Image (cartoon, rainbow, N blue to C red):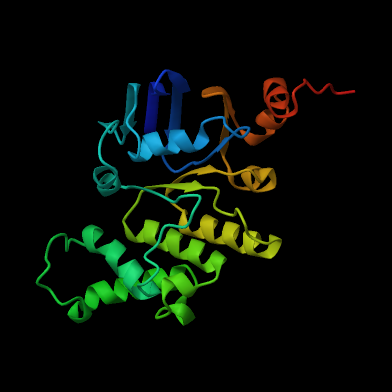
Length: 250
């Protein structure tokens, strides 16, 4: 069953087409990677799904509900969260406060501004649980802006989980990390997204083939292939898109 469906999605900037009629289905619970050469439109596609950009044409359905051109906060409250290429956290708040802020809506606090959060036992216990999930217990009261880069990315994952997301979108989640940091990040992503749906953009093909159940290849704003990793690896159109020529078996 598809949790996310795109039908004939287009995005133009002025007269320039960037996304050119994408049809895509992401199944509930799957880990789906979107890959493609630089300039293929991967980040633009993420922006369209998450509401940062409006579509020029077409429809996007999340859990059966049309979400194209909705505001990002409206889409997030339906159960979709995303990360950005540049870490998106509250740097002046500590780790605990970042996670607790993300929990407020999903835990039913919404606009209850008169409540003193330090007195909300259930909320604070839930915050501690999420922090433990992402392995930042020893950094719970550090300012988020002073964390190491890989820890900030872990915090961003925690914020996505705390929001109650059923679908998590990660844009280049291991970019800028060392090999050991990337390995830890992949293990954390696998743990955090267990039982959830994951869509990721990633340039490290070893991580893509390790994590993804299915892969979609985006070239010049069009999906040229969607398949399981082993079939994508041997697809001549994908080889041509990345290497400029079809690779023979010889």
